[in-house]
Image 1 (cartoon, rainbow, N blue to C red):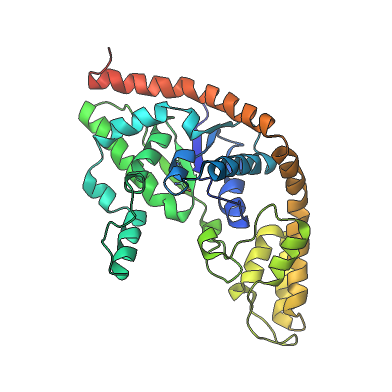
Image 2: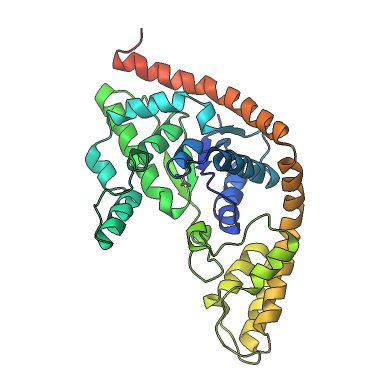
Length: 332
Ligand code: TRP
């Protein structure tokens, strides 16, 4: 039997190159060899997105994005988290096995508290229980499907470790391997994709390259990538250049070597290097952009794909819950 890979993506706005290279691409690569279940984590998004129109639009945007990037819904079970209500019963079940201390140590929660302290506000100001219990809901997403492998970015590894802890607590209590203990699959190389200003590409820094930006906008944004003030003739170091980092993600090995050599020789201006980055990026993204636009124009088709995925996901979900209810003495 094939092993199961599972991951979720939060529908919190426009997909960008960082999402594509760091999450979507490696997950699709993995789906060749695994029994894959990929879903839109819409209940996780509810923590921060309270506007229904925006949330719905983001869900469709992300779903269309994954499909445009090559997800085949015949081979990958692809669904909305909120369409699999078993997730929420499992999350409730798991709260009884997750210690409050464990959740106190979650990086995202600690960072939110620290931010409050820094501005001398109440430590818990603006922190909802959805943020605090985020790792439990994520553990439920994972454990519901006996996932072996969870491809995630660096910032999510701790959450997968918490899912391990919680699964082990359940298994230990009932002295039975009721829940599979998952492993995180960190895509090292792609873990931190730099944005326009060299910091991690992130919506919150406003430094992203949107994945489906029209060609002209993509070109303009690439021209805005920050570089140092070295002149055309000066030799440049490809290994410390944001531009070259991004280039490597889209260029063929021989293209990478050629551009690195031109960096080192000198005589390559930043403008020319940017035009070359645009060329290779657009070469890969143009067909995706086209598929994305077609899907975006047909929400009924999108919704049908997601509904079919949820239907497939619910069978195994029910069986996991049945197993737990029985073990717990809740099975009548
Ligand atoms: N927390 C993940 C993120 O912010 C999204 C997510 C939700 C997820 N549930 C998951 C990822 C389960 C992997 C497995 O990107």
